[in-house]
Length: 308
Image (cartoon, rainbow, N blue to C red; front, side, top):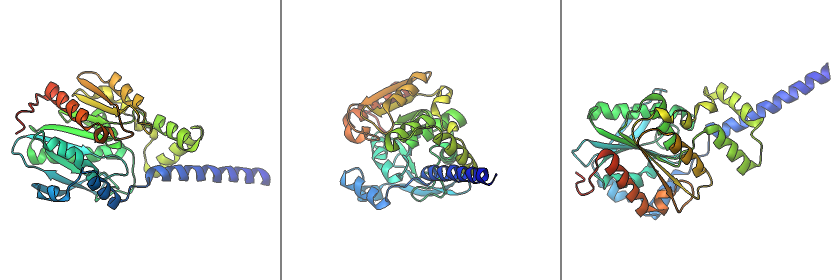
């Protein structure tokens, strides 16, 4: 009896160790150093502090339904009703969104950039890869529409986790934008984790993912299975431009192709020739901008000769 108890207790400790280790890796994923993000974006010419500081903008804190504040910056040089929200990727912050901000400013859009929970200047204790972030995005959209009116023409651009967040927002909560641009999202969190376990750790997904999922439900009150854009993509009726680099080996482009195939209604797909994960814009800028223009012209009547 004593030996059986010891074996059960050892097994229990082993399961707890696995559960806490993998959920810590998810909930408290190591973020990029903010100074390094600034340095990287400045050296690449994607962020010019003087130009950014000269733009007419409003710094705001938006209340999250989860009880913390989200830091956002509304850049508003135009008196028109065109707005776009930029949703950054995991481990990044709103500085990483400035390159996309500049792209849309050139096209006559006012732009709102913001920090996800637990990133940048926003509150929040854990990262949930789109689950709680989708509620925050809804709060950002609701704030913007409250301030500027429901009649604004609104787009959302998301990169990586930001694209997943955007698709979950639109597919599960509210298809509340006029168009979406999804750059390198995963289609299914479980499959993405399975793939990363195999590539990074050479480990099988069973029994690790079921154990991690159990502990995630206990510790952060959601399931891996809930973070699945592919399950909700058919609920999105407004146009989506899907973007992915063909050479992305972090989130495979097949995931975006899967989302594109299942999306009903207006859609476009651009598979960039160059760049790894989240590098479609930086490594294919001319083609990226051309595809954006084609998408906007086709689906929202954008005229590049009349940006204001």
